[in-house]
Image 1 (cartoon, one colour):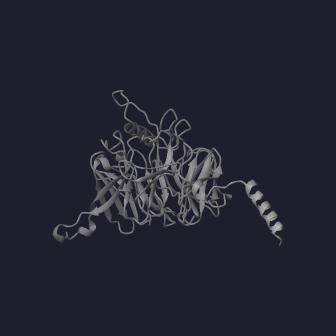
Image 2 (cartoon, helix red, strand yellow; image 1 turned 45 degrees about the horizontal axis):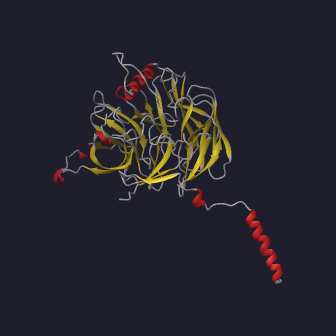
Image 3 (cartoon, one colour; image 1 turned 45 degrees about the vertical axis):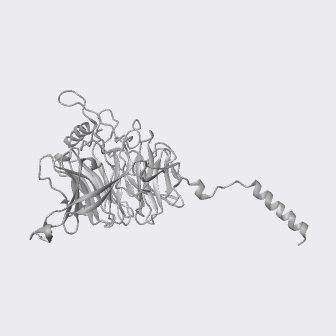
Length: 448
């Protein structure tokens, strides 16, 4: 080839490059919107979401792929997927009426519903979308009720149904399934009521009034499964008690946990049951007036159930654990300021998270608006002397706490709903600390 031909070909190649769209390196495209080190805690925080009004999933709903590389979130116009390695966000499914439910633990599928959000409304359709390709497939039609979980092998959907819908807040701004109307920011609750003296109650106390009204309505309810392969609907539990907070074990495809909802000091809340309706088991029975237990969740390996325990309500605080196979119990004591709306456990099960709370909530914490890391510490037997029945008793412990995020500018009507990323290096949470609702991640390892 002559020198002239080479130069002409190089010139055409250069022209083609000049005319082609310029693509930024993937790392540059994926930079977080904002990143900083919390001045109080020394932990690095990134803002994941690009659009105000975005939301991560509820604290016990799985939002990560089985391989731990991606996460799904709700955005104002649908569902988006986040690449955890660089916080890149891209649309997955578009639609205003879509409700993101959870991701599968076996396949790289995000599940969502299209149709009414409330339990007693009309039919809704459940779809699955491949997180990598965006390919959508119809999973099932739910003629009545709502879907709250999927089992470990992705063969059964788990849902609840109520014969009629009763708004928790009479003006309709808060529905019984925990899904707010459009007048409320996504994920932010609204409760208001007057006390016996006619004066307005606090947010937390007004919520108790509304929960009790819903419980006393005695609306017939069902917990049911839908077989994804056949579409068969099977009732697992039926009651006129208020049934709620349904979730499948992350590892046992036939184990369900659910709650008897209502004011926690009035109900024995936490139960497990098999998918065939057998072994309906109360996990924690109250022994004290005004004792409460709730916001239950499975450990990552599915072997333990953990829950907020107060003996009595608002005075003595524990994170309590129940080992499913043996019935053994662990209780970790918490200071008032460390009480949290929700707790969670890291993938390696070595630490817990807590999302704190404000002074109007059940703990009335004067300085509790922080996200925490809790390292468990057992209380040992004195001088190695064991009681004969020590193995049958509750194993007590305490937490070594660490503040992770300063949340003093956060409005706790929006629950942070912390989850650990699958590698355990970050905690993802919701916050309105800068005004609008956004999704953030905080690095577990501090910079100090």
